[in-house]
Length: 267
Image (cartoon, rainbow, N blue to C red):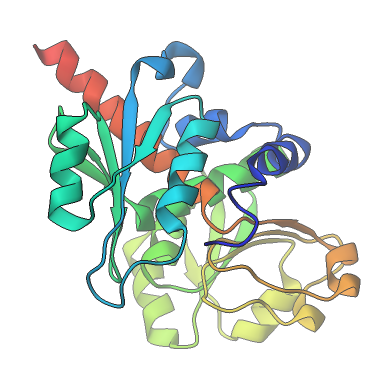
């Protein structure tokens, strides 16, 4: 399974409260522009479906997802069956939200609305919101986005919407330039390492950790994805906001709840 996650969700909440002023539930809803205090999350039920396609089931992934959802105060179960059968089981057992992932996509599906929230956008939204909470707002602030893929490009768009001044860089400079052109107010860095070393606020959307010698003293680094390992000297000189799965999952669940509530209002 994803090491330490299922047994450490209270630690994630403590980390988030300490570093961002929000617990996981609050962050998840704020990331998608909603207020958790206006939602009765306990009336919803979720299911986590193990998927075997591609390279097969990630050990413990579905259980970890279910634990995250429960940490938000929502009942969640792991289906006994996998894949399409598991999806059907989730519906039969009354799930309002179904979470599942294969090699290409991780998503949460609102059964009532027939709409899904995807992890690329929601991970970006979760980590942008975490950074916003950590530094008391992003309006007018320069934020460096390291990586211009699906998550990084969403981060840049979200930062622009909040009035920040994003600088984006990628090992393939043309990708960063394309993202900057698509988002007025954003700029593409000339040099990846130089931009990293100069940044005080960093969103790391690359699949690898940032070299410790490039992180400046006092920087705030909001970094999704697989666990990133830094030496003690690097951890002491900067603030890191990171977890393997929860900060990206919580906005997916929140988005599906909002989709469901919108559908209910239509009826």
